[in-house]
View 1: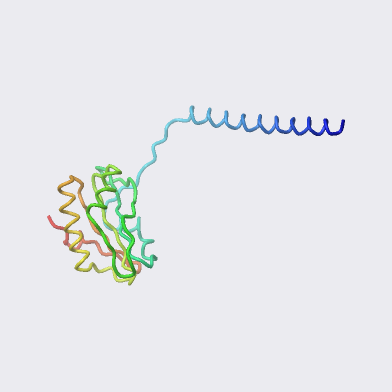
View 2: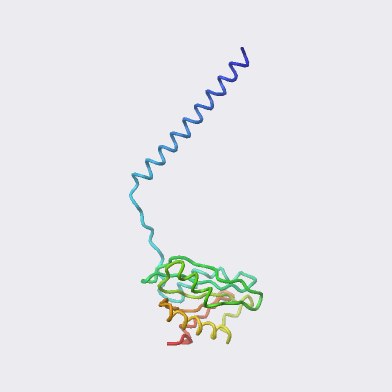
Length: 167
């Protein structure tokens, strides 16, 4: 008889637990259905400083990384996407990979960002070359390449601000 009583008690606890879970699920479903749709405000990128602030943590990386900031038609942030991870002093960036990600996420405009683990944010000749290639590819694909930010040691360089973006 004690064994039967223990089984009944356990099944009663199971029923209570199940009912509590069911009640919580019903409550959440009701909340979700009746809650008004909230559209989050997306950050707008207005200048190179705003773009830098989105990615300034990249200065702590020990390898070069190239990322893009994907923007809509009014330069509101859609997402950040890592395109490639290189070595301590070099990175590989392909317009094909950059624009594949940009098109995948419906970019209208993009900003390229990469770090220099050396800490020197001055753009290299290779940085200038890839920027020109990315601008040309963007024209063909109708996705504007707005800037290329180079980050290092709590500083940054903007190729757009330096006048190094082709027109």
